[in-house]
Amino acid sequence: MAQQQTSRIYERSNRAHELTPDERRIYDALDQSRMPQHVAIIMDGNGRWAGKRALKRFLGHQQGAESVQYVVETASRIDVPWITLYAFSIENNLRRPETEVGFLMKLLKSFLVANVDRMNANNIRMAYIGRTHELSDDVQETMRWAEEQTARNTGTTLTLALNYGSRAEIVDSARSVVAKMFAEAHQRGISIEDMLAAEGGDVEAIAARIDENTMAQNLYTAHMPDPDLVIRTSGEQRISNFLLWQLAYSEIFVTDRLWPDFRGQHLLEAIQSYQQRERRFGGLGETTDENLSDVLPSEAELAR
Ligand code: FPP
Picture (cartoon, rainbow, N blue to C red):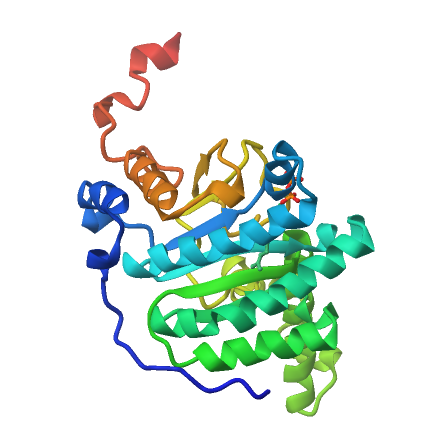
């Protein structure tokens, strides 16, 4: 591709001085020791945004693409290492009219071409998750180009989920675990049966080779931490087949604001709300006022 190579190498750095005054006001009140390392966003409401203004849906998507750039730049200024955006689901691909899917793909290409320089200026690295090999060749080519152009950046990694479905991802993870077992047997020059027999041939022992860690290491997101915070715009209280495994302990922030109206300031508000939560990961949490010696029943209570 003819576009000029414009990558610059930066160290990871906080560029809070570049925030707008409204963003800065919220940012200054945040607890720097509790910043989320990974923020995931379900960008919803483009169609409604356009409908409210009696505009065609595509204009909502176009405006939504502008929000992507604004929000990601704010994330990079405050040095959030990972931001993952649900840009196009497998269900969008299958269930939306071909004309809308075609428009979204064109928009993605023009977004990437138009914004690579800004990504580089903000030290943002581009990445993708999803069954991207099913997208058309020209879209894949532009995606690869943008990824390569930004590969040397060291700040925020922007991951776009494209032709992404979380159930499909979990299926792909299981397939990859099995494929690796076959590859291992092949490499050792033995059949899979012989390899498994060498491990005792016991079905349970073989199944135990697969644990949560194995599954997670074979997800598209194996190289990233799980999201600390997931944001959904436009008020729907659903996960919509997004990062089902990875969101197990994420804090959820739902806002009525439609995605084309979402800006860096709203990202900071979501982080502010996140910092007011107590994360427990299934435990009791630090601020529990429970006297731990009172957790178990007494002899008398047991006898009742
Ligand atoms: C939901 O709007 C959003 C999408 C279908 C995908 C998100 C797409 C964008 C933000 C635009 C382009 C993105 C990039 C990265 C170039 P909706 O149509 O479901 O809205 P509705 O629920 O109000 O109809």
